[in-house]
Amino acid sequence: GQNIDQPTEMTATEGAIVQINCTYQTSGFNGLFWYQQHAGEAPTFLSYNVLDGLEEKGRFSSFLSRSKGYSYLLLKELQMKDSASYLCALLDSNYQLIWGAGTKLIIKP
Amino acid sequence: GAVVSQHPSRVICKSGTSVKIECRSLDFQATTMFWYRQFPKKSLMLMATSNEGSKATYEQGVEKDKFLINHASLTLSTLTVTSAHPEDSSFYICSARGDREAGELFFGEGSRLTVL
Image (cartoon, rainbow over all chains, first blue to last red; front, top):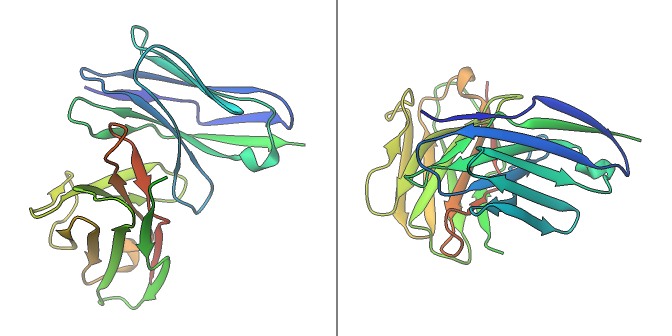
């Protein structure tokens, strides 16, 4: 079967760095996505990893280790607008997205 | 980047009526579109996969006769909530698979349905 785990909620301070972890189990793998979702809005694409390693994109970076079934999203120089839910999603062997429950990130001044 | 437009963004209807939600890919052709439903404080739930020119594939537990999906062209998919009831009130989101990066999805703005 397939399973995705990520923390339910995290709190961080404005200007700091936060790492949101995602672990998964799957029999087929075609990549892992991170999406950001503000309350009441649709998710927006942040990153896609299919090979091991770190992908950096501005203040956001995403890491993947396929052998460990592990990914993380790293947010630097946190801003208040980064308060949102962050969804980890797995692309399975049928190219269907399997969603995690999301991590609600709360940024405090 | 690719744009997906969803309409209407908000709709309020009376119980027993039907509501149609449109999802359009504006600058690319989408052979596959997905319809999601999101309950408050929950993650997205895939309702069905819509393929152009063929019947939609529904996820287990989703009523085909209640949530009608039509993908008549490469740029348009519609979701019709038939005989809506208050429990159908939810946030509905569509997405389309782009034709570039494998698996990357582009999302519509979402439609908030309130059934009175």
